[in-house]
Length: 394
Image (spheres, rainbow, N blue to C red):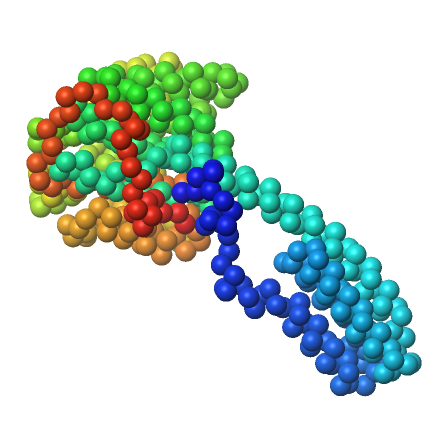
């Protein structure tokens, strides 16, 4: 992700020059081709009349000064053609080159301003994404965790899916969820929920208490919007707790797709016994939260995901068969599992992704570290992973 303090030259938003060199030279190539045809063909073919197309093309990719210089070159070429072919009637074309060059220079100026504005907006969007999705640690004791995030709004790389992990005295706690909608309008709700989890995960002794804190934060945030839209402004979420000294994981599901647990005995879909209310809807349907427990063993793999994964469609409109896909996976490291999921999703959804998606892969390995004695600061001791281990975008 890009920090808001990053310099433009260091940003991944900048295009590599080598890849676009031929495209950037196309106005010059067009000028040379037109001039060559104009000099080598009979005057009545009048190839010179399309010379104004060169500065017009340059305005789409060049700064103002190079665009004006190319227009000047075209102007001089046309003057030279009028001397070689006196009856060419070149003065109309010369006037056209001047007019098009002036318009192209203005168009280039406007384009550069808009590109700069878009660049700044994308930096802010990246910074907002970094606030919602903080860098993911790869290991907590014997628990290895990796993350995947793909936004449907690919230009902004930001959406309404969210996740977070906290290592607390109660165990390693995970959150993954999905705000209704996508893009920038969903980011505020996602930030409210994630920030609430970052505090509640260290204070609340059970997952039900965390869910109530998330519900309260979501409700306060959405109180600023029209009451008529209350039923349309909700989030689904899954809370997971992996105790430090226990072989059973706890899961509280607030209307979210059920996690998948792959073990030596096969694949288990961890459906909730009693679904808990969606976030921001507890006031309408009650705040009765239910926590389920499931056994796990060393080398089991837990996959948490949002509905963007299961709702990816192929050309025929068929949904991505996640359970079948997961059933075929070998016991690999979480990063390899998510890399494979990323690759197969992009291959399966040939039309592109229609929704944001996020996933957390958890592998239970050797015995976790003993529980911490004191409350751990959620951000102070967290270090950024290497760049090749960070979340990936489409």
